[in-house]
Length: 314
Image 1: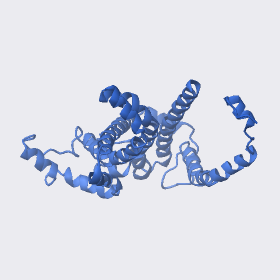
Image 2: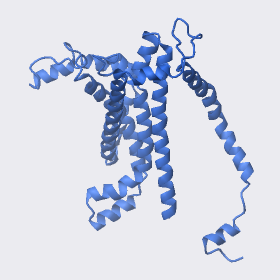
Image 3: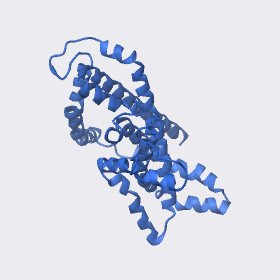
């Protein structure tokens, strides 16, 4: 039989795969994750959605009466909720852009390391590997009004004449928390992007060097397209983590001062467990879940559109 010379001939001579068997194997591999999601994720989600339509409180956690959309009406008519939502979006956008931007710069730098200097790559991951609570406590000491090393530094170099109340001032609290967040998350971004950079063919860079292509064009036309899928997944992960971050903000400010760092997760905790309004707190949780789901849906829609475009151009 002659060798196939076109795609149609290759398809014609290729034996058909046992589709049903492959499909069963796929379901088998997916089953553990599906069971986990159903048991540990779907039920709490359903229960939270149910509670959001009741007036349940901590004194009567199982016996709340159905109140319809009253909790959502109270939530959306409260200006404080919209301020909390705005702070959440600012915190999420700045932390995602900062962590991935700094991580990309660090990854580009580490990708150029050679010899023993590559050992520096292991040191970068230390902030990410450290537990969040100790990181938050150390950060609280750094930002301390009287004994913090940051105030010592700014007064020594003449940036400030007196001590700055970093975490007790509504204008500096959120930027301080964002700085700690970016410092904590950028190593993870750097390591992931470094792995993507090392997958780019060196022949492309060599061809660009021979053609005399500028570094900016090399990054724009070779590096960026190669790491774009990794950047997409990384952006999705960091966005969801930022929307859900509680421990760092709670240890440093508990949402204060004057609500300047009060994100949705912090507001949910205060409403549900400090003010005992489980129903209203569940409504806040449902709003946060809707935002996270929307972000994920947008990512997959963009990824599917790009996949179709790539397939059409192939």
